[in-house]
Length: 402
Image (cartoon, rainbow, N blue to C red; front, side):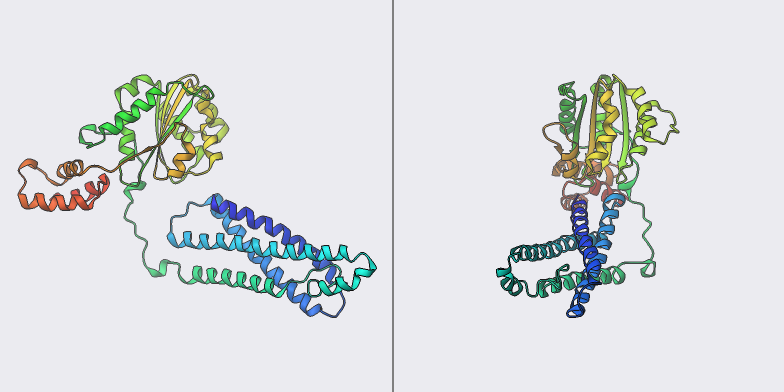
């Protein structure tokens, strides 16, 4: 969203600057020889500013509309471009104020007896009757902006990792793998209370919202905290399975593609392959399956922060008798965007006792109760460093298992 606001700001400033340049170019051919060198220099500064702003606008627009940025170096470069976009807007606004001052002086000089005063006060503010000059202060700001853009470009060209710097690590990211609703509940530690709380919230909202049949509960927490596991426990809870007519689980991840997500929901509901690809056809097909039914939908690992995309995805759900959507996300911003219930569910870390129990299950092959005391002490010290994160406990425990 910040990129979108910066993009809109610089586009607005660009429109102003382009209109100034068009007027200046038409006037420059008829301007007197005296002062033309300064005028040409001012115009060239404005042209350079315009070109720089167009490049910034194009980059910010593409980043907002088409990219999910992961690399920290790219995030830094975009942040610097956003700051530069707002600075460019300030420079153009300063030129606009300068132009308005000259226009006011021109109007004031309409009477002949004020002509001398007009000439004195407006000296240095304009080049001729058509063109407003850039003041020295504004020229300095313009050059500073261009220099900052060149600095960002230099950083991008010289400090970005490439194939020459080494091989891209191909170790699979477990957090990026597709998830499913399948869970082995006996192996889960410490989430009974959380499970019961969410089930109670879901089943207590049976058609409370008269304006819409759709209710959304967001589960929020950092990576590795067990959001997906908790959603699996809720999804497979006997009361939940019995209450809802239709159940669907979709792993969304970073790419919020409405077509693909809708297609995945259809496949989850029908248990059949779906060859449709266009959103109108997909939504019509989904409506056929869920209309006037009680639906439970889990959307796992959601990153989307655009309200319009979310609303479009949920359109078919409004035809249901009741639709409960459970969303898991690392982002509170996403949770606040989708949540319809009073508060999202913020997942806490495991307690030390729960963490130790989980570590013992994973790290010790047999005789957990009779483990050597020295291993118990080492294991507990390791568990403390895991800060109650189930994923960290399981990964380290599995490494130490043998």
